[in-house]
Length: 123
Image (cartoon, rainbow, N blue to C red; front, side):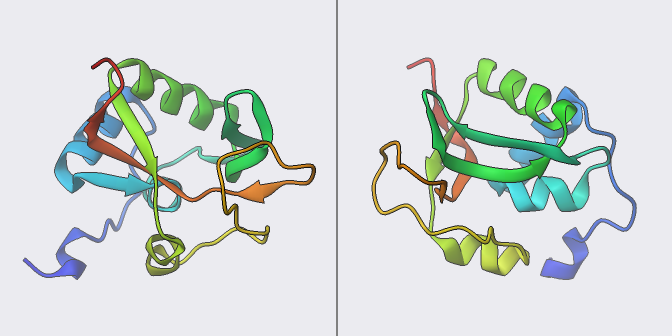
C-alpha cells in the first residue's frame, strides 16, 4: 500500500466510532490529520495540557472536536509528545514558540503531540 492509498477524498463524520477506527488503523495520529480528514473540526477553541493553559497542543478547533477528543481519552487512548516533523509531514504547524519542557509558560507555547493507541491512560 502506498501513502496516497490512505488519502481520504471525502471528509469523515466527526464521531467516536470513526475516530476510534481512524486511530486504530493508523496506530497514531496528529491533530492536524484529524482536522484534515474529519468534518466539523475547525473553530475558535484550543486544546491545552490540563492545568497548563499556555501549553497548547492544538489551535483553531471546534467545541465538537474537543468533546470527541476528550471522549477518546476517556476510552483509554493516550497521547505523547512528538517531533514537530510529524506535523510538518501532515502539512500544518502552529505559529507559536515550541515548548522545550512540559511546564506552564507565561506566553502560549506549542507542545506537538500524537494520539497513540499504544499509550493506555488506564494502566
